[in-house]
Amino acid sequence: MKPRRTTAHLRTIDRKKGPVYYAKIRHANGRQTQTAIGPKWAGRGRPPEGYFTQRTAQDALAEMVSASRRGSLEGSNISSGKTFGDACAEWLRYERDDKQIALSTYRSYVNVVGGIKPNGERHGRLIPEFGAETSLDSIDTDRIELFREQMLESGELSRRTIQLHLALLHGIFKRATRKKWIKSNPSSDVERVTFKSSGDFTVLTPAEVAAVSRAASSEQMSTMFTVAGFTGLRLGELRALRWADVNFTDRMIMVRRNHPNGGVERVPKSGKVRSVPMIDQAARALDALSRRPMFVETGDRVFPSATGGVLDDVPIRREFYAALKAAGLGHLRDKSVPIVFHDLRHTFGTLAAGLWPLFEVQGYMGHADIQTTMIYVHHVPKVEAAGELSRVVEASMGVEISAPSSTSSGFAPNPS
Image (cartoon, rainbow, N blue to C red; front, side, top):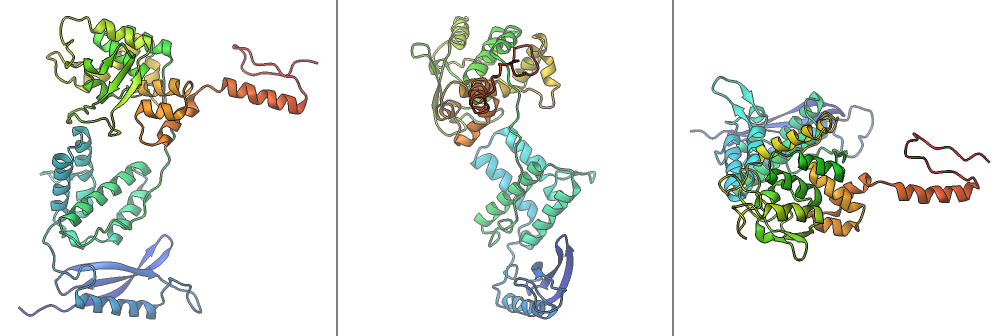
């Protein structure tokens, strides 16, 4: 068969910031790629740095054709024969089997990757967007940038969700690069989508934690809610807790394991074992639970299933919401930021931040980054701080003011 020759042509695509020159090249290996050359200069005179005229864009195209003929241009090498579908399948296998991610996380990844159902219905986004049969090395940075722009312009997804899609794409191509299916990761240079977390969440007061615990349907659930609210253990850490981890003498709980729902038991999320203070309320509840007729040996789970195994998290959440309602706190589920089981951990974090230095709270919570712990600072009552600043302002202004009463909606200066 007579070998193909490299052919190419210049094209212009209108973008938000203006027209851009692209090089569309059919390489000798039969593959086609489209690569951005740079923004088009439509003004008069010498173009600014980084802009291209028709002539300079043609020169850049000629250089790319030469590189393709030498085999040094991206896409001109011999194809691995792997498809985007192959890359997705390998990455999902790697995350599930090699990295052993939680089952819930794996399922969320599968949902994002998606595909085409037998009836032709599309689900998910990545495979429907790029195509399972698309040659892996034909997907370049510009193609991913276009996908990014389309997601942003559609307004269907939050910025956080868009960034998740891009992060998964990066992981898929990174794995394909490791497997040597492609030379480089085309998503490496794609601009990230920034977003800011509001940092808002709902917490219970200590009295509300006690009320929810009393409303629980069983002693085990009651104790779990108490321990979660007053020690800050994550749900997976509660599910993995053994009696050997509960030290009544030294009044602390050792957090040695985490058992994500559907996943494999491992060290806590931070990767480190930690200890947390066991306050009297938690200790009394655990002491009472330790007197049950079974599952009280040192190696037994503190919160086991009916057969002593790991307890599924679905009934735990269901029990928590039912107890909230029974305790007269069901309205917390109807807030703009509805309460969830994880907010029991936030309850502890908020109480702790009002009492101990942040670096200690960070250690108790098992946060790898102090910035994560900082979210609790904004939920700590500012009564003392407000009082201190009030006195400074009062002294500066020479005006005497009174503190607001507990029933007042505001305050006013004392009459002189």
